[in-house]
Image 1 (cartoon, rainbow, N blue to C red):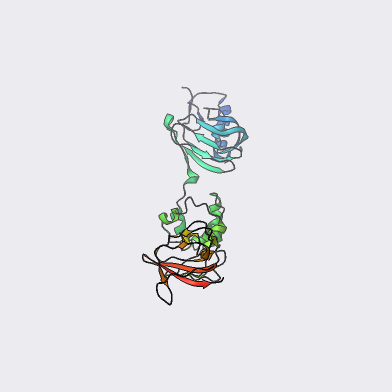
Image 2: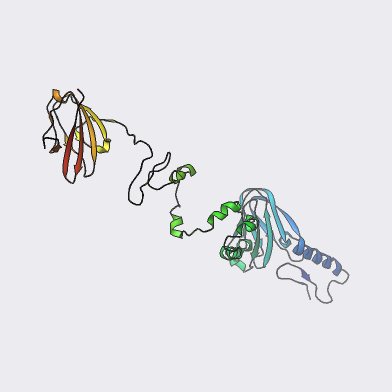
Length: 324
């Protein structure tokens, strides 16, 4: 009766009465295979973009190593195919090849081991549909956090997490202690391109009180308190629209007969310094003048200051006076 071989490792099973006088050689090869299976470290040199990791029945082969250390000079991501595809395999992998390595056995799932990283993988030997599973990637964060006493002892667990690629410090992780944000609230940050400095503009001391280099906010009553002066650019009006959107302090030099138009909304106001008002005909929109004598339009001079404001749909005007 001819020899047979173990299903997953190719160890030769000598039939009764076979290999008289030579069975010792076969046994020595079998023991070497077992040595590879238990503690063997194989240096696998990769080139190009593909490599086949083979287990040959009755012979020492790369597919029998317990630990695979990938090296060489692959030209890009290298796909390592485990052959045959009907053998169960368990490998400890260290990738030093300079490229990502994809472990495949069939049309099922593959495992990618990035350069410089390690993994424990299992090949299910399911034939053409064989799949490879990354056992080291299975990590239940909920279970871990429960074991870490809901983050209070997480600092002592950082060392373990570094094996998963974590680079955060204990202090940085502890920022999460007490976070109550929902997934939807955290997802608001998805796509934010602001820098740290820009986000820190929101770091205000008192809501509703302005601060240097900070955003301006309103308090619970909708009030805004400015800690220093409110400064705006003086706008030189070239058109004829009384529009506070151009600024609340405006000037205009009259060079021809001029008719102003009303562009104020209720609650808005502006001041206007008017030059040469007495030299030309100046017409204002429908306006209620506020003066000691009642609703009387002012007599303009060479240099006048006026204030306009609107309440509801009524435009009011105040003649401050003349500096001519």
